[in-house]
Length: 110
Image 1 (cartoon, rainbow, N blue to C red):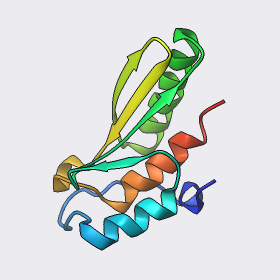
Image 2 (image 1 turned 180 degrees about the vertical axis):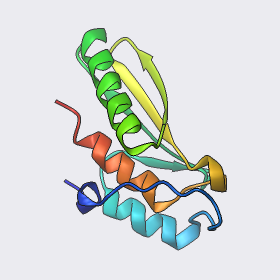
Image 3 (image 1 turned 90 degrees about the horizontal axis):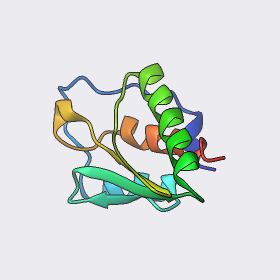
Image 4 (image 1 turned 135 degrees about the horizontal axis):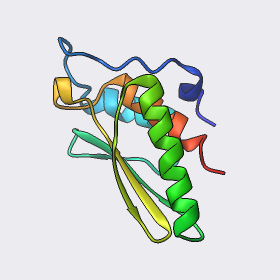
């Protein structure tokens, strides 16, 4: 499990530059797993589940996390899968908090 999951997720409210290039590669490597950086703007992963119920339950757990840390991903729910997309709207790209959120979401898979 990523050491990022142990960190506090404090979303950026703006005023900082989004992560780019080598910084993105470095923090993605710390995250590990199946996450992908899309166009240096979004972080995305599709989780697979046995059925719709498990996918829905995971979606609800991620939703609870989002409400707790006040950082809300975009989620796509379908039969047996959930795609999670994360970015920091205030900076139009990726911030360390997005990677911390991703690591915490990974811990919610049962």
